[in-house]
Amino acid sequence: MNLYIKKTYLLWIIAFVLILIIPANAQEVLENDPLIGGVIKEGRAKIKIAIPQFEFLVRSESLTEAEQKIRETLITDLKNSGIFLLVPEERYAWIEAKVQGAPNFDGWLSIETETLIMATINFEEGKIVFEGRIYDTKSKQMRFGRRYRGTRSQTSIMAHTFANEIMRQFTGKNGFFNTQIVFVSDRSGNKEIYMVDYDGSNQTQITSLKSISLFPAMSPDKKSILFTSFHQGMPKIFEVRNDQANRLRPLPNSQNGDITPNYSPDGKKIAFSSSRTGNSEIYIMDMSDNKVTRLTTGYGIDSSPAWSPNGKSIVFTSDRTGMPQLYITDEDGLDSTRLTYKLQYCDHADWSPDGDRILFAGRMRGFFNIFVKDLRTDELYQLTINSRNNEDPTWSPDGRKICFTSDRTGKYQVYIMNADGSEQRQITSEGNNTDPRWSK
Image (cartoon, rainbow, N blue to C red; front, side, top):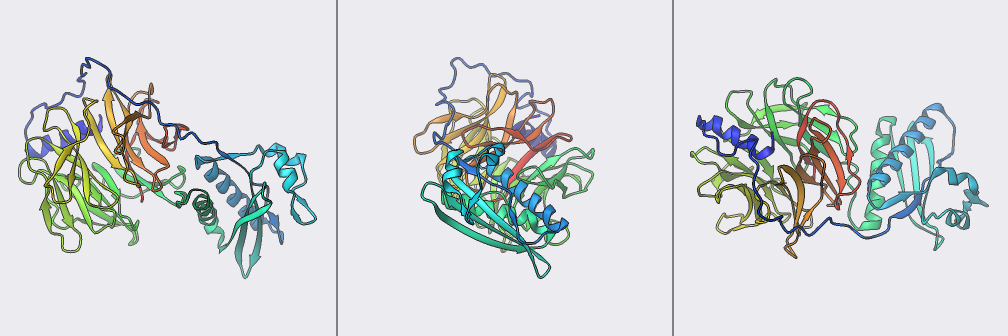
């Protein structure tokens, strides 16, 4: 069941009105194909990078395990970065890694290495010490170096942190390697909230309410997750504090019929959809005093609000003109503008971190796909194609990646792809998994 129909179904329950607004099997008729700009391509060559095995300053079994974990995590992160291409490791044996204690730059260049990572690993005062250095092989200069100290349980964190710093050095933005994604899964037999690292590791169940939980959203400080749950009967918004042993509480001032919560960029407000006055509208709650303000007023179902990066605008879904489309309104709700026209069915928008693009799911020829609307040029781009339904898109914090769901394997699973639609990879496999939101 796609996201908009699911939300509509919730609102039918809330209002106790059994009116079929949009049939689940409806097939819209397109007189002409929508004008799609095409697939986005970043158009830049990937940086060829090599990561030889680390140098051991002392030898131990636990240090060998730590080196393997850090190096494997670092390789995975850089493969997933979208900007690096790993030099095949079999080429490493063709050259000497060092000459007279210094990197063999000519040798590394001969196997097409542009950027070289060399590292040492050691024990100091019971802690693992990992020191990584990045070299530019053409200039034969060290670009930067970092030193990390931690326990064996912190090896992944050290690797992710170093990978983030590498991304910042090359792109000017922090990487996404220490981020998590919250999502809904029915793998336990009920729809519960789960959290997973960006690469699919450390999948953790957050709720155990044995009911229906939907639409999770993580706070900017990563200490709180909001979601909609039916476990007390009618749907309301609940908060789970993951810094307090997953302490659960109803969100203050949340009422029956509140769904699709979303934090503002500074975490001081949330936007959500509610039918508390009868019709489904967008509301804002100030988290300091729990004061609720109505943002939209009009006919139709308004849902799925998402904030602009500066917190001054909100994009949301509305069927006020018939089929669901995307609209943008200011933070006071005084100026609303329709955003999408070329597709007959649009939903689940997310604003890019740089503020110039809006990501969403749109239906065409009976299936949902992921689209991007460029606010600078007004161009519309399609990112997925010929893979059944692709829905629930959400940006990575740096805007270089997109998380989404797809039923291309028969069940809904969570996927990650580059912002141009390339290199799509599955990160969940058990049960049906939907409604992902990337931590910011």
